[in-house]
Amino acid sequence: GVVAGARAAVVATVASAVPT
Image (cartoon, rainbow, N blue to C red; front, side):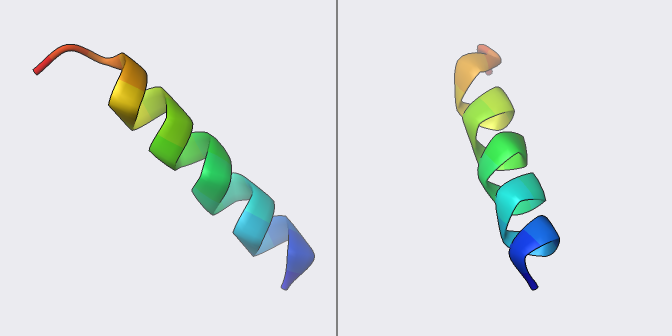
């Protein structure tokens, strides 16, 4: 759904912002 897609995008953005 739309909410799931939006949440996935936010999670991907946050994950890419966190240094490994």
